[in-house]
Length: 134
View 1 (tube, rainbow, N blue to C red):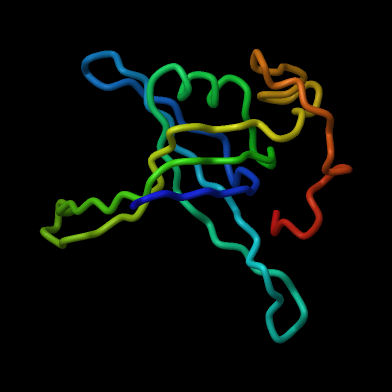
View 2 (view 1 turned 60 degrees about the vertical axis):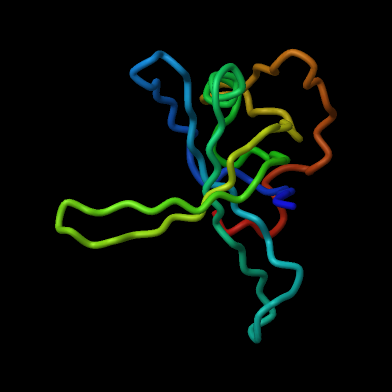
């Protein structure tokens, strides 16, 4: 079984591209707080790369922005590639089956003031995000 569930905040704007066949693909990073504090009493976060496809990719690019709270459901995928210098690299990323927008965007900025259809949820975060490292 390969199932991943994440709740966190976007660390940057989603990057939308299209394949040669015209299929939309978006990439973004989600900052997920660890459930404990470090020796200095501070919370740390893991930054997890997410890939989403097709119409959902376009929705993410249109309605999400850095700092937005999201829920991601998907699977972990490890892919390998070779750099132009001939070095082998491995990348771990979550391929999202579903992305939920868990807060409202701020007015005026990218993704702000707009809600995707069916995502009219109250703002439960109370503002900036309680301990998110950005």
